[in-house]
Length: 113
Length: 117
Image 1 (cartoon, rainbow over the protein chains, first blue to last red):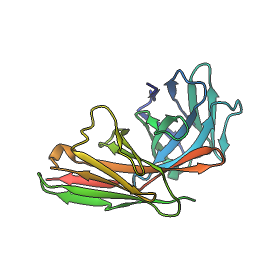
Image 2: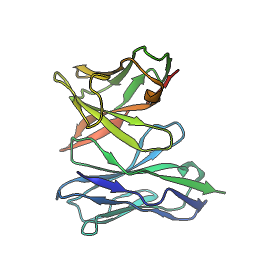
Image 3: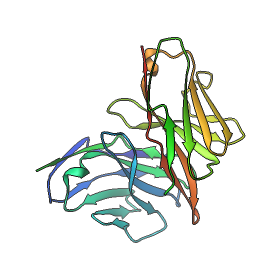
Image 4: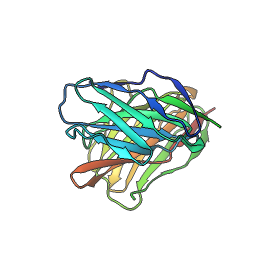
């Protein structure tokens, strides 16, 4: 079974600064997908970024980028120019296409003015 | 983009009664939907995979006779919590997969908060 580990229960960042959230996973598959989801207090899951394992290039979405290290099974999320609206729970997720997501335990991100 | 809705958003029921939660894909057909459960300050845990026209596949430890899932159409899956007890109080989230250029994107509903008194 695939497992996803987020070792940082809480992180804090000042507005406009950069923060990196860590995620490691375990799988024997060679083709899979990795995700970062944001869950604000409304609890609606919002996709932040997706990475296909077969792609070597790290995914980027505006202020959000990932550092995907396939051999190390590491998938960290970097948030640049942090904004107050970035405060939320962030979940790292793993799936094979068409299958359910395995999530890590989450990291609570606090953004301070 | 694809939209998934859930109804109700919040339900309170008495212990021993049953409650039904609906998950709808509003602008696409979803052959597969997933049901997750999230306890306070915890992550989402997969309960079951719901396939249109066939029986749901339940994760280990999830009682299929207690959590009845019906995926009767390509746009609707329902989760019925039978004989609910206070320990069933939780946040239930559904998702539906949508094919996108060779990849199945997963869209989440807004969730349903169940409180059993």
